[in-house]
Every structure is written in C-alpha cells, then in structure tokens.
Image 1 (cartoon, one colour):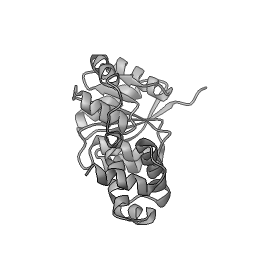
Image 2 (tube, one colour; image 1 turned 30 degrees about the horizontal axis):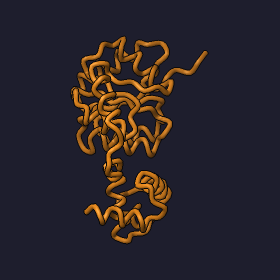
Image 3 (cartoon, helix red, strand yellow; image 1 turned 45 degrees about the horizontal axis):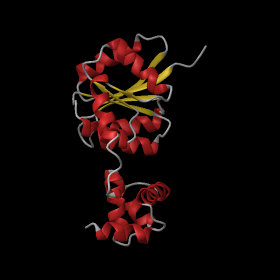
Image 4 (cartoon, rainbow, N blue to C red; image 1 turned 135 degrees about the horizontal axis):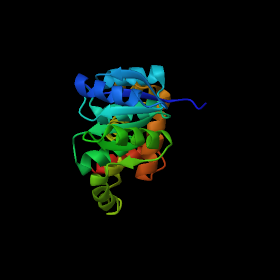
Length: 210
C-alpha cells in the first residue's frame, strides 16, 4: 500500500480551514497532519512535520503567505506549496511562484478539484487555476526583464543590500535570522541571477541601480 500524501493546511479563517481539512481528510490517499493560523506557525509545523504538500493562504497574518512560502521553500525544499487565495491577480501569482509555490488555486474551487490539485502538486507538477492560466502565459512570454535586479525575490534583495553594506555571511545571517549556510545559498542564487562572479560585483550592480 502506498503512503498517503501528508498535508499541512495554513489559513487564519477557522471555518474555511476546517472545511478544507474535512474535505481532504475524506480522501483515502490523504493524511492531514497539521493546521496553522499564521505564517510563523506554518514554518514551525513544516519544519517539524515535513509535509508533502502545504496549502497556504496568501493573506496570512504576520509574515503573509508570500514571505512564508519563501521561508518554507528554503527550510523544507521537499514540501510542495500550493497557494489558496481569493486574489485573481497575475502579479501575486508571479510573486507566489517566485517565492517557490508549485500551485495557485482560487478559493472558489470545489472539494474534488482541490483534491486533484493536491495530487498534482505532490507528484511534482505545477498547477494554476484555469481562469488565471492564460494571463500568466502572456506575462511569462513577455521575456525576461531588462533589469536583472527585478529577478530577485524580496529576501534576495534584502541580502544583496546587506552585502553592499560590507557584512559577512554570518553577520547577514544574524541580521535576518537565517543560518550562514542558507545565506551562502542565497548569495549563489543572487550571483547567478545578476550574472556576476563575486559578491563585490553584485554589490556594485546594486549600487549603480540605486
């Protein structure tokens, strides 16, 4: 017998969250392993439980869903994140995928559709609500932005600013509450996105763009 798909549900509205949990728990191949009401709690539970799929509300108290997605992608890369949202907003959708999400689902979705989305995400595929899919394809085919700094996530921009202030990886880690190893990983990504070879060059690119 195959292992069930382990799911964590994070949403601050109890009625909606409990409805989602109830509908998913009725599926024989699912196991809901936890519930969270804030981004901070979602990260803590994701680290403790290592779920296969995290259903994450984009409008969470505290960090908010996008920041939470970025943190959980870094801390628990095996967990597939599906954003649950009322926002039919291409910018938020792009930001969600930039933060590491693998799915973007509008809250009007049926229980059967949501179950299928969870299975899609767990299998490693990407899912976007059909009403938004056409718009996202247009946005993605406009080409890469001329300014590589636009490619950076919010956290990467923050770290680049600290690099520009001359801080070491350890000092940056202390400032943003991440390990030195995680900061090194972020800086590798930043160098790749900016197409430069060293942190000094990266800092110069950022300084030139203001």
